[in-house]
Amino acid sequence: MDLNSLLDPRLIALVAVAAVVAGGLVWLSVRQRRRLTADLRKRFGSEYDQAVRDHGSARRAEAELAGRAKRVQGLNIRDLDPAQRDRFSFQWQALQSRFVDEPKGAVAEADTLVSSVMQARGYPVLDFKQRAADISVHHPHVVANYRSAHEIAARLGEGDASTEELRTAMIHFRSLFGELMHLPNAAAMKAVA
Image 1 (tube, rainbow, N blue to C red):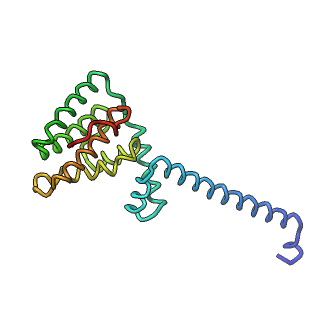
Image 2 (cartoon, one colour; image 1 turned 45 degrees about the vertical axis):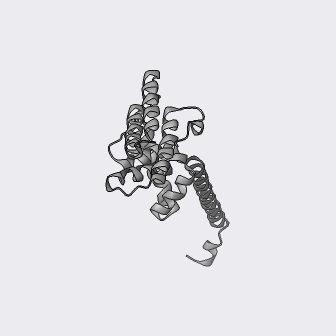
């Protein structure tokens, strides 16, 4: 090719159009990426930050969170019927009242009851890590508390949980229980002594 063919106005126009199109595609990609990040941050709250810490990058964390949302979308999550809601509420009140006399047993029972409510709502409950990930899609603001409460409940057999930790676990289980039950103002439920 000679210099005159490189200076052909048609070639220059074609290169300019290609550059504008490429720049536009890059701009759209960056804009879409920012929108995805903003949407995931808004939807998952502090769980977004936890996922970034766990996965080492925002891109991997966002892929994980989007995967969670897609997985949960495929589940048959449903509301509890009134009879289920009444039964679970009665069980919660009973175990909460036993906390004063038998805190370890009440915490273990709370962990089991929360799992039962999740299962009744349609969440798979076999693996705790997956259960917490699934819950994070609809209840991201309580999932960290759920992980903490479950960890305390898991240490009960080792005798490593203090009374204050048991109380904290009950409060955390209660917040998720209220969310799963769709109880209005779950935070206003009677506090554990």
